[in-house]
Length: 156
Image 1 (spheres, helix red, strand yellow):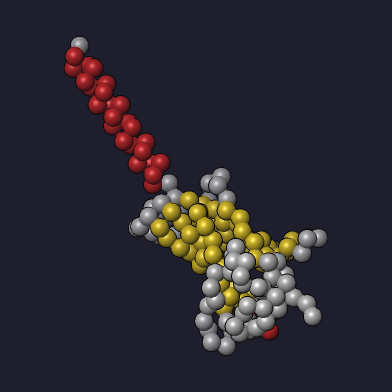
Image 2 (spheres, rainbow, N blue to C red):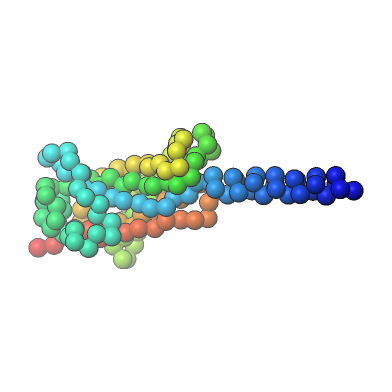
């Protein structure tokens, strides 16, 4: 009778440990950053998402906070949790959002191989700089979606 109780306790401990490993290991998208790609130097700007000090006005001609003309934007999606080879895919979408309608710029699913707890995946957007962009990213099959906006604007 005592052996049965010890066996049950050991089984419960093993089950608890297995569940905690699975929950900890599940990868998720936790953040996105975006950087202007400067056409002349090939350099990148500082992160422009959520950066109120970085004015995104007429970036295509190097105005606003842009140091040079820029018509391309690199978006970096941050993943936390180990991705098992072949099992971790990131779904990313970028759409121009004029307020009246949305125009898909990029919709891509890419496989990620990552042996550490934190990884990054980059996506390049072309013809950017005048129209606000809405970004979404998630791990394929996950319900958790991260959404960010890049508030580009042009004018005279």
